[in-house]
Length: 344
Image: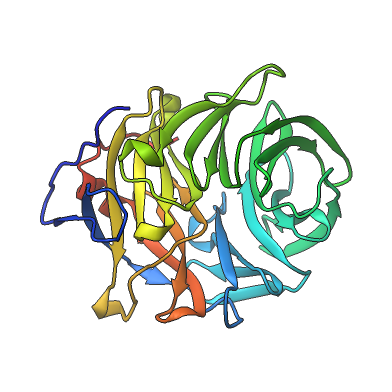
């Protein structure tokens, strides 16, 4: 594995990891810009966000967030709650655009129903629960959504190490393949440019799987044992999507309160690690113990280079008023000295 590379840029500070048992790698500080209101339940409630970009008016984009005790919560970009859909215990959520349709589709892993489907009306911005489809296994855990060649896909992960790839519409579903890794999975993200899905194995590391071939096997990207910054649990995984397959993979190293950045293209060089610090001027606390994350590389108001949204375990105390924190991707670029790429 390529050694971690971290460049000091501007006034970004470098520190050494202080978490017990975590590899001592340089970690940059990135300040949070804003936050959502709480997800709406005490205890372990908020888990995973997804950013929906409004194609007609980026200022009217949305953040979808799961409340594991209730359902889906919809936030505006200013962090205010816009809508609440109490459909039951959903864990992870993802969304992909479809320019052919008046509504985009979001999906969520539903502990009791399988995969829940939501429609986002591009005109009214209303989110509606369109139904569910069952999977072949109990307790779908993580989820990611892909859209390739006019086909919507769902990657569904399980605690026994299985990932299923489904093709679906709001009214049909078909299992494409099932692959078994050794231990518990959760986070995943589709990369349609490379025809792969990146998967987080919580106690081991990151994998890449070609979703177009029925005989493909998972390929290792990084491991906790390699000492590049990953620690258990490897949780949320997302992409900053640049043109021509450029960009970055980001993974949450939960126990160390940090995030590891990799080059999107093979061989997935490690570009550095960062942690998210408080913003006293905005009255926003620091981020700890992140589960799910999502990134959009679209230009949004206040986020000219894209938006990173992460789950925060404590707001500010552990498992109290959990919410989602908003980060300007340009701050990550500066802190890690990343090349400024053209967005997809």
